[in-house]
Image 1 (cartoon, helix red, strand yellow):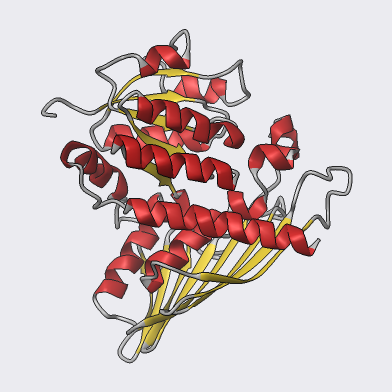
Image 2 (spheres, rainbow, N blue to C red; image 1 turned 180 degrees about the vertical axis):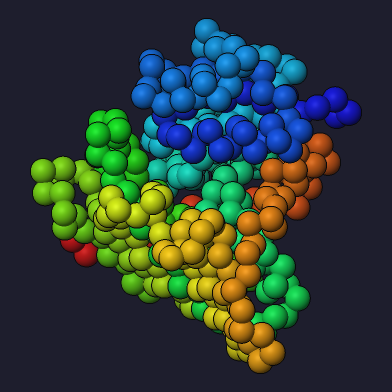
Length: 336
């Protein structure tokens, strides 16, 4: 492939599609079409950002176009795996919003399809791939700045924004549960920073403490993970207060044998800007502005599509994140 990569979007029900598409365009992809079922409340914002990208008559029309290389998926979560299978069977690679699947049966179908077609099925774990501070943290860890990583502590607080949420947001089967959904971000980061290819879920809980009139919503979740390389703890919630100037105070602490890194990704109360990184080791104790560290995932994905390589993220890693997310979700719900 010597021409620019051509991509299309199927499903724009989640606003994550804005960042997915914009970052792929910034990396050099041509955005040539989109389609979604009905008219979700994300449509106006999507069209405002991409006014020159035409809407197709159907998703099948986009899949039938032999010049399209990559399909972006950000529809209702329970529908994403089905479209991914159709796209790969049509010869396309896929970049899905998280969660890429909501059931074990869907994950099994995706694994079979990848094996049969040789296509790439990737997920934009935006809390890693769209956060420059995580890019800088990865560089520091690779440089040995904190020794061997032995634990990650990830928190994923989110604002509910009830008035903007569609009905499917409150439907457990539609979004897959809080761990399957937003917990996948932190599971991804645990595996990545500890260098783990396998892991065990040792604790998992979900609850609805603040929204009793929405029994399908899980507004709290927690997970503990263990691997041969290290340990992880994750907390998730939909409790971000209105006074916070952004949707959530997402943080990640990476503990090493010779120091630690703390990421205050989206806000650090009392300081301006985003992407605050704290590094403490035997020689340094400092706060670093990591906002200029870049987001290399999207350019790497384009090269992987061109060269059939795995530099952005391995397929095995994507599958393992989904497997652990689904396992933890089932464990939490079995506990009641």
